[in-house]
Amino acid sequence: MDKINAVTLLEGFRALVGHSPPPIQLQTNHSAQVTESSHSHTLNANITLVELLQALKKLQRNKATGLDGMKVEFILDVGELLHMPLLTTFNCFLAEGFPEALSTGVVHVFFKGGDASKFDNYKGITIGPILAKLFAMILDKRLSEWAEQHGLHAKGQVGFRKDYRTTDQLFILRTLIE
Image 1 (cartoon, rainbow, N blue to C red):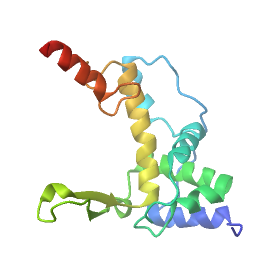
Image 2 (cartoon, helix red, strand yellow):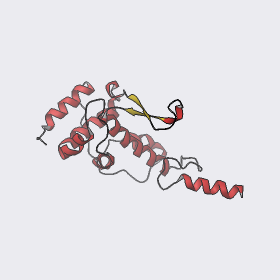
Image 3 (cartoon, helix red, strand yellow):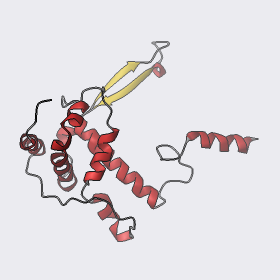
């Protein structure tokens, strides 16, 4: 892949956001102890390089191109050149708000098989900008960890939680019935 000028990428991000991003302070981790008064600080703290790298590891190659025309492979193959511009941009989103240009998605409907006249035989997926997906992945992980640390999930909720399975719920239901 050709070398990409990080300054050019940052200028493109600035054009998307509409202004220069505020300076950021890198943080490598979050405090494990959170007090009631620091909830907002924890959730609104600058995105760290660690959080960005974790989200980048979860991106999957060979997926649909985003609405912005960007492929996941571009972000992954550029590597470290893109880390600081992404951090700066995402922290600007936190401070200034999420740009409307990244808030658009297109729903594509796919036929799964079976009777074509039945609605249940179709699956819809939303294609949006890759940068929006990456930003959402970081926020989702941060919010999930925060809710888990503070016991804010309902005790019976197992969907979308680490180390929980819906089969556990089936076991409980079956036991109760028997």
